[in-house]
Amino acid sequence: MQTTFITGATSGIGRAAALDLSRKGHHIFVAGRSRDRGAHLVTEIERSGGLASFHQVDLSSLESVRAAAAEFRERGVTIDVMVNNAGVGMAKGVTVDGFEKHFAVNHLGHFLLNHELQSTFRDGTRVITVASSVHKRVDGIDFDQVTSKGRSFFRLDEYGVSKLANVLYTAELARRHPAWNTYAVHPGFVNTKILPGWLRLLRSSRLLTPEQGAATIVYCATDPDLAGETGHYYARGARAEPSPAAQDPDLAAELWTRSEQWCGIRWQ
Image (cartoon, rainbow, N blue to C red; front, side):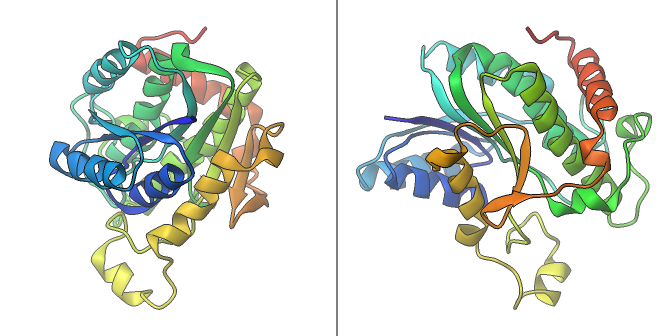
């Protein structure tokens, strides 16, 4: 049985992916902030004959990430599929650790979580990071700005920077850990709470359902033909071309080094 760890699995595309992968026989480790929603999803999976358990984690807090990872490592379980899905959109302010919220949750929390869980990965583990085509909105990362509250009105630039970081991280992880298979995924524009209400209303007829948005995640998690591919970007169930900035190896290396410093870690 495949084991899959999914952050942000209690709602939206994370929940849809968890349910689909459970139906395909995966043991699902549900990670999220809400213990009540997590317990509800675990019960739903178990009633359908699947296996699941919940791990509470707040990706905006590096301390919470470390604690959740330590709790999981005690289980002695190997992770076959890691899905870095949890995210925030149009958020304001900085986290308790002093980072802009999008950057902290969408990138830095997952960067640390994957580091803390790497001992549970095996050769061939698939690491899927949910990015977005919005990464193409920005052409780089101002590393001073990721420690400020953000400046753009709807925080689209801040969101774009965090999604650019997701794609860069995927490519750099592939270079540094070629034994794993890494994928950055654009799920499409999905009708979930990560989009502000006015935008969901404006684009309601063109938004995807969570199940449709989860399809490329599930594809990257399960398709046998992708076992030899790593470090690439996918959209609509196929490999796609990311922005030029997302293909900059120097920027990816700098992001990695700075992320290590901010988290106080050093990857093996």
